[in-house]
Image (cartoon, rainbow, N blue to C red; front, side, top):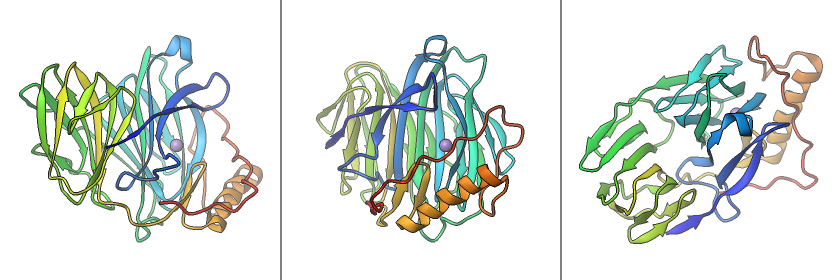
Length: 300
Ligand code: MN
């Protein structure tokens, strides 16, 4: 198993909250099509300011928001206004281009969750923007509980359609539980541990780490020494190289540079052929950072 340790990254502007980013890393771009794993909290919102992420663009990806506690208000340029709540999947498809904002709500005292990105395969990455909401039923067994938000595991299947084979699930294990999870041997897996400590196929994973498992196994054995909460992510190796910069995913430097120029065109001229802004947003949109001096390289 490969252990990916988090680095702390500020999210948003002044009084930014800090997130723990385990993907991407220098040595790893993907777990299946999953290409971005941010994990945060539990944060006392009075102390840490909560989530304030004004309108910003995305291309070529889907964002999956998953909360353990708190509430986030979402607005996007495709006209969706939604609230992200614990145990509920909110899946935004950027496709050819979208912008959105995310703010923790005034009633939120503790903010705790994850934001995950999925790269769209080349065949589907220019699709129209979309937003889906799904509340998976909790399925329980001896000492465990699972909520499957994408794909299928432990006898539970999400109805949400994906653009490539995927797994995304929240699991809770009681102290002393050993769980054998049957998995698709063509999948690679990532296990993001929120709290507790686990042995995964005999190797230790500590809280906030992402343990990566190669394809070729038909079962993952998890032993929980204490109560544990984690996300299990998976999918077949993505098999495409991407250029990922700021909030954009493309396939070439020039394509991503053009996305940046189109976003700035919207902010400076008030309209653009690719991007627009969410309606009635309380904050001004975020300008894109300057492009790196060197050409951006494909990864993966
Ligand atoms: Mn975003």
